[in-house]
Image 1 (spheres, rainbow, N blue to C red):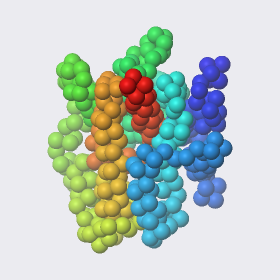
Image 2: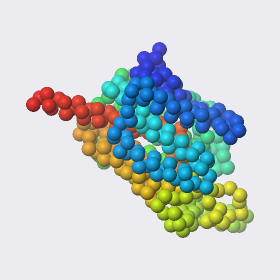
Image 3: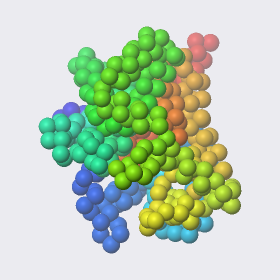
Image 4: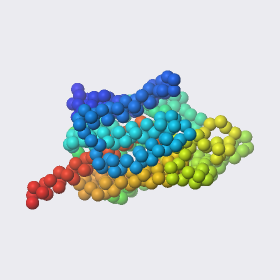
Length: 413
């Protein structure tokens, strides 16, 4: 009954149910691949069709604000698909970007009131219930989530890193629900948010994803700098306490040394040092096609051409900025930065309408930009769906409030 009362469910039951369950579907989707087409790919196409179909049904238009932010990145991306040596593979990958655009745009189409924004926030938080339940099982049966690096919690996701960033987002949405003065939730729901934040933090630590730890720290630290200084002290204390955990010490110490001695007596670079070597090695190839790149998602395709290894598989950049520059050239990187910085400016422009809530939104996008330096953030599809829905809902809501404020001022005159 609660689901059916949601404004988002009333607006589009299919999209609502798809988003409610998407965080739990990876194990199922990984088993479906028929002739090179997976159920996950079909869901991506379904989301795009549902979005554009909804626009036609309600005779709506894509917001001018959305087009200003996304048009450049989408255009250069489509060009990179055309020039790719593997256009079909590139297009399949680029469909993910189109789903992010659809999520962001969908929020603009859907959000018409405070209740609409509240339903988006609740949906994101409710989507975490099954991943948390799976995580509980993995804590009880650690062998179900043990990798070559030891126990790393991955919940219902295919990789601990994706789960880690999803947890950061869920905690951030809960924090927004608690702090925002523009949206209002029941005391019962706020109590739920207070439970989900520490639960997310515990699971986040267990993922052993260092960049997600940094993102979590950065969000609360930036929020503290922008509005409540006590959170700066709070997250610093939490960070110090976390360093007393043995596996946290190991993960941090691993970054302190560029290399390690292996059991066979050889030398092995740590993940960050390895990535820096890969980034530098790709520079000559980037210069060869510096404006439009080599084609979307072709870094791994060309990897063994510019980085000789005794292996037969490629390697992604693990840096969104390097990956985009290689795939889409400097024009692609420029349009990606226009998108992210444009969202930041939007939250700053309307900051006074909801200082606490906009501080959270600003912190989330700033932290995302930070971790793009060390991870393939655009490849984490299910996480990105929720991220862009959250950011799009926030942008749409502050523009809606700004229009209402301008109307009140005109009526007052």
